[in-house]
Image (cartoon, rainbow, N blue to C red; front, side, top):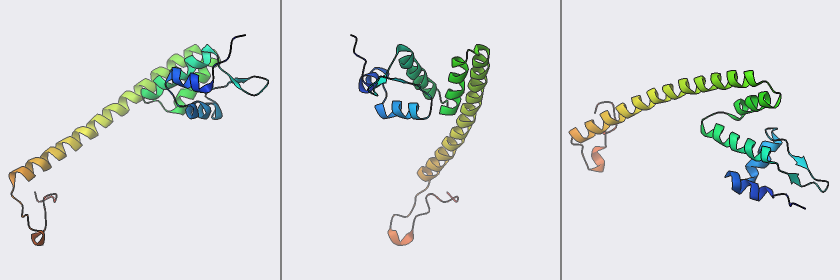
Length: 137
């Protein structure tokens, strides 16, 4: 008889913590079968689903978004999967562009501050205070 892998072994194979797998089961992302003695039974499909969840999270999808895709796959609505996935990717691209704009503004601000600090000589004694980060720099 083939022995079922433990949650720890599965977690190692997919690069996740066992607690994460249990959490995904608790919130319904993963529906695992149980043996008569209550142990989880893992299939290749479960392993592939966990790998999909991991990749989707790395791409920035939320668990709710991942759940939407998995529900469409499970129900056989492949057109919905393609449409939902396309919409989610487009939304993520817009979010990334906004984050890049914000990071560029932050970088410019910090570069200006650094240039101002390097261009000016500031008092070093504690009684004179420090104004190196004020807007007057």
